[in-house]
Length: 40
Image (tube, rainbow, N blue to C red; front, top):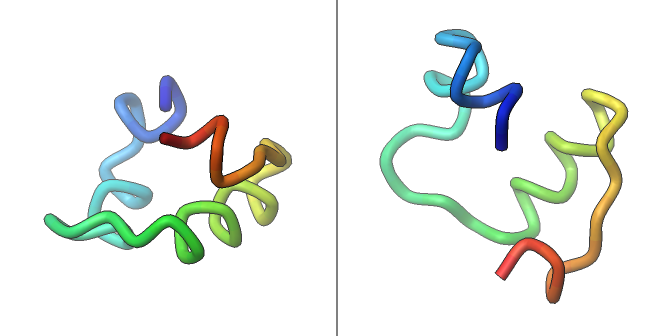
């Protein structure tokens, strides 16, 4: 979440609606792996 707060690029990729699966994939791509439960 901190990386997203500091990155306009990540904010643009996420958009306004946050899909759990997409966030997990993006997190893994950025080296931050987490479960759906952790995300919620």
